[in-house]
Amino acid sequence: MLKFSTGFRNLNNGMKAEVKGAVVGAGLTFVDGGADPDSITDSGNGFIDAGFAPGDILFVQGATTPGNNTQISGQPILTVAAGTITFATGLVANGEVGAAGTVVAVAKGGSLKNIFKDGNLRIYSGAQPSSADSAFSGTLLITLTESAGAFVAGAFDNGLEFEDDPTDGVIEKASAENWQGVGVADGVAGYWVFTGNAADTGAASTTLPRIMGNCGTSGSDLVMGSTTIVSGRMYTLSTFKLTLPEYYGA
Image: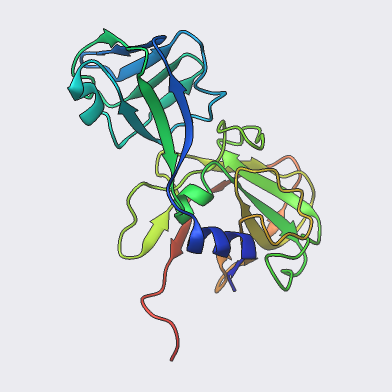
């Protein structure tokens, strides 16, 4: 059965929307990309250091052109580099150099999507631990990331993400992503753990966000064509959905 860590439940119940990072100053430039994505550049190359990541919600205040505030506010970022962020075309009302007081910021909320943004999914051998707060047991067989890329805690590259808009209480993997991994050991899959973007060594924790479930070929939280994992073989998770029940209790 699905198990949620204390860390996740506390974050989900109590986390408020907050500013995750910001870049301020005249080194910002608004660029109208025409038919291509619009962008903001930073001569100080501070976007990554400030924690900006694709999918983050972008907020702008203090631009000389009012439309650069109101039209960009609340839009998700498409790509991030140290000196450039891009977002949907048509959102920059006027290309301009930012004024000294211009603020470009990103916000983070307390939803499941935000808490587990750019995390990874690990599959282990053996029985599922009694709690998602417990230390991970068994042997790590495979770690699923975006297109099997290397996962680095605290960085957005290759982390897993969910779709923006849940439907009927269901949130699922981002359709544009390939959740893949290469087996690192031979074994039989017993359970899986979805962890967040922060470093998680697998030790017991009541603060780290985790979702844990069992594996099997039918009737399991993660249904697999075969639970046998072979080292060196590529694996793809084609569908992943989490459903919030309509009601609890009898």
